[in-house]
Amino acid sequence: MNSRLVSRNGGELAAHLRRRSTPLLLALFRTVFIVGICFLILSPILTKISMSFMDQRDLYDRTVKSIPKHFTLSNYPEAIGLLDYWTAAGNTALLAGMSGLMQGFTCIVTGYGLARFQFKGRGLVFGLVIVSMVIPPQLILTPLYLNFQNFDPFGLISLFTGGRGLRLIESFTPFLLLSLTATAARNGLYIFLARQFFRGFPREIDEAASIDGAGWARVFFRIMLPGASSIFIVIFLFAFVWQWNDSMYTFLFYTDFETIAKALTGLESQFAHIQVEGSALASNIGYYSIMRATSMLLAILPLLGIYGVLQKKFILSIERTGIVG
Image (cartoon, rainbow, N blue to C red):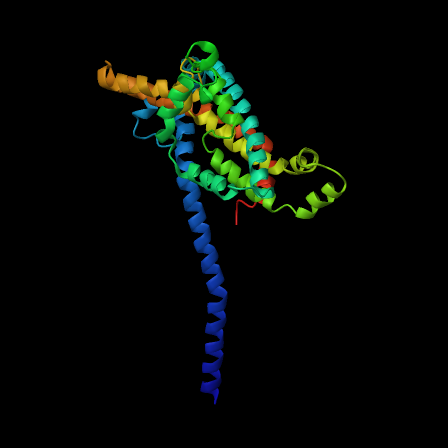
């Protein structure tokens, strides 16, 4: 009898331990997994931060791993001069801010139309929006360049210019036109997000405003647009960050306009040239490795500042637009 009671108590204890240990093991697994992913993401950034404060001697010192022995701040002023940082950052902020604001508005208007209005070809238009999300931008670079090199929609301009279109290259005009027509890079994604956002709006709001005599324009500008501030912030930040990091479109449309991404690309070209042809190879590689790490940190610092300022609004906007989950 006693042995049976002991066996029963032992079984209950083992079952209780299994029930208690399973959640703990799962929590431990999640913690290890999340820490590992965070390490993979943050490790390159932490390495560049460490390199930006190193002297060249630390790169060839095997005892130096992460913490520099010869701590220096001189790399930052040197990288700022090498990149012409303030000019490039100002130009990039102007272009990215202008494009982000216009893309935010035009993509919201387009998404609102696809979500709220019934018209022939709506499914086809939305299908083209989805297709634009999967087409690589490199595929349409040549047609875009030729279009803006000799801009003549429907042959109307040639009627007044003797058979020649307008040359819009080497100006802001291509960026403005692409943004105002919601056809810039990644705009398919932004339109999709705006459409999904407005589909979640109760239709009773539109109906109540229509009963009060408000037209679609008044409904949009007085009701829908103020309520779409969350999706506007998401689209603006996505468009701003993409334009900030873009060198492909700026090289194509505005060669003489210096941006952060183009400055970094130029630095990479110098680094490759020195590796192949430079004298004092080891010293030059060490110097440009440090300059490259410092320059990349300078390039992302404004984005980190913007994220720090808009962090709460951005996270709240992501939750409201339903991007997660």
